[in-house]
Length: 298
Length: 300
Image (cartoon, rainbow over all chains, first blue to last red):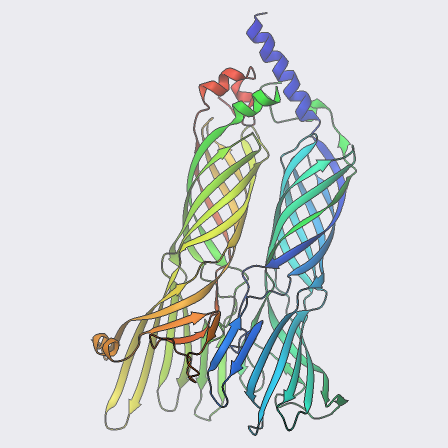
């Protein structure tokens, strides 16, 4: 056998052996933690009010004379994920992941020199917007480069919101000499809307079954307001039954009579982040014969 | 052996394709008004509306070209240039009074946006079929929007006026991210068709709106307007009034308003063709693995 042929045969055998170890087929579980920042967020809500920032109005002027606005998205913050997956072969699999934002970022707007609703004096206030433990289910398709020790992977699929309610807390303090305070807390329920989620990362095998993974991931999602309910209302720290002008419950729609149910609006939930965790594989190490990557070589 | 395999797997490629994108993670309101739909004041003074959710200006027909380099059989880099060839236009009737006949309608669409997308590429490898995924950033190179506002008003004794304002809405830089999952079908060693589902996630901050034309009853009066009053509105994420004045204007007497985000996320289906350049002789010489064993053992 010529030397070249021997080298070709040797390389072929080695490549096949190497790839046969990638051909893992079976279930796995994975879990991890991460942090996400707003992506494709919004600066203003439907009414033109900023989600985050500050406003200083000159008295009785309709325009803001000093302001800052910042981009917001309600899935930003510390998140945790746990999932189960199945690899059909060494390269293609499916996964279902539960993803919860365990410490969502809160957004605060401070505003001073605001004309009070009664139009009699000036007030200052803060408005805090946040989500409370938004949870998503993420079914996804998974590609893996395969690899004995280090493997690149990518995931892409849907982001289905299981819980995506947002809250707004309004604190108002009248300017002296009044200095009375008012606090309102609203819960906004959102309608179901499917988003897209994906990730690209690398995993490092620490044993035959366990590996550590690190990934960059993102979610693209807007949720639409379904209803808003006043949960708490206090004046000078005492509970009150006085209703705000819009009532205690507002139902939103996409069409109808404006006064009865105002139009719904989008609430940003897109993010991009970095996560890391561990994966335990229950896959079987299959024989070289299952490797279909180099059939002609074989 | 692995080094040899890596060397042999190194390969440049170019690609191009077309696709259609649908709005994703969109918005219904900009903060200054709805994007798509209508609101009507009826004869009985009741106000009704019909708004459409999920407007996003990346929707529509897109074309893309790209080039990339595979470091190994499975890992590479790709740089795509994405252009909105026929972006979806959103029409909005912000005010229609069925009693007086007056109305205010507008339309807005992206004006051939161009995006640059550097991405990491992962491939499973395969003989005839190859699965791949991409993920990376999106950098807006050009993202202007054309807004046309039409106002119809009736004045007693003067008749009906049809005013049309055309504006160029400019956006600032903002990073987005993109990803795709797809499959390639190889016709031969170098040429393949590809099809994919991809995602673009981005919102763009509006920084300026320039009035570019104004017509009334079909006659342009733009030059008269531009010489008498500002035609530029600036949008900013922060602003402080100058010299304690009580107007949101800058030194150039331009109105300053809080910046808002234009939704630019989409999910699309794209297809095209890719050409992989033949591997270099240096690489081939380093490996004794046959060419068909690399690049997933594609047929020679």
